[in-house]
Length: 380
Ligand SMILES: *Cc1c(COP(=O)(O)O)cnc(C)c1O
Image 1: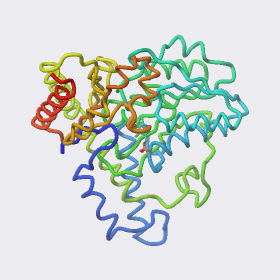
Image 2: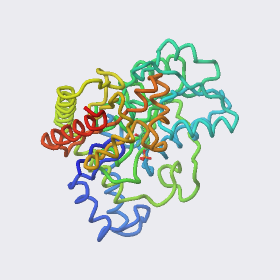
Image 3: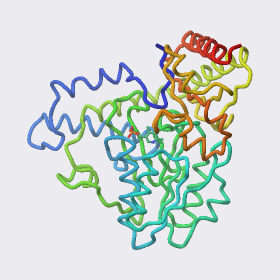
Image 4: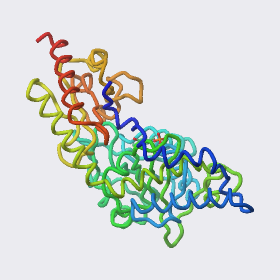
């Protein structure tokens, strides 16, 4: 099979697995054990990983805490910040095309008495900056906007959004599960206060992630979601997932040295795939923007071909419809619906996600298989 679903998850880089193995075997210590070398060694490994993750986003290591993934980071950022700052206001702003880990967390906050504005997006998935400005209220405490969308790859103008948040003394969080490791992120330049990161979207292991929390004055107050041994500054207690953290550190280290090469590779695969399809097929629509788009993502509608039927036909290519996470039912993609795409585009949307280890040959083969399947289903 050819794996083209890298927005859902990525295979681990073999170097990451190599780096992790000793921490699953002989270096099994608990980083909180202060009385012997087992603990010291585990702690040193965790702190090294923290440095590497921080360097990818130009943060300092004290600003990074480890979690179980971007879902937990999003929960901690939103619930933790809102609950700790509710006395200053009860209003938050986010976007209708965010990942469920943001939207469902916002729904929880609504049950707790907060109000949330869900910004609309245009046909390409971008928010309207003027609408954002208008939605800000005296009691707005937090704005959360994802850096890169997981279905259509839209890259929001994070820098501008952060600037607006700060002009209004509002905390700015961004879910960067898709953007981290795929594009340059400088949390200071981009005015980001909190940033969510996931390991398994950047060739690291599943079940590990991080939350960047900017060190600033006055301090950003967050309320922990769990209680226990006081690890990670008390914000995320529980024995650390040492091997996972080492893996996230190693994947970050690889990003530090190969980001540009990866970007060029992904861009060229993306172009090659699209042009191969366009050479042979008509009525293909690109969903999402042509510019300001995640280089690893291509969301296409093959008009007249239901995505479920196409996926059934494409037995040797792993892809998903626009709504893979939600239900496997293409018409359910709330992201494409929020972009107000026509029903025929939504029904026929397929998300292709390219990755570091895809080769040109695989891409040409996958394109050929898609062309055959579409022609067959169209009866042409
Ligand atoms: C994958 C993803 C998440 C969830 O990350 P996990 O580490 O799997 O919890 C959140 N947000 C976005 C945009 C994602 O792509």
